[in-house]
Image (tube, rainbow, N blue to C red; front, side, top):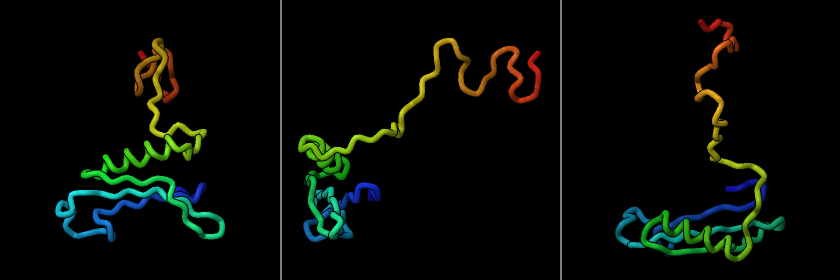
Length: 104
């Protein structure tokens, strides 16, 4: 659940909820829902696919295509790339005594 924007994702493996035999139904349903200040729920996107990840991706695609995406200022999961001239992570350059141990 996204507490800041009152959104949550609901995934079920049957039309009536979770079933204890996930492969028997052959489908996953994913719903992205937003809860209003008055506790009303609005379905922003929904998708049904044989695989959970495919249903999730399709629901996210629908959310984006219908303009319900919230632009975040954080870049979660981004890989920070070092400058070409900097030493690899975990190493120190010559003369760097940041750990208190002089390099020789």
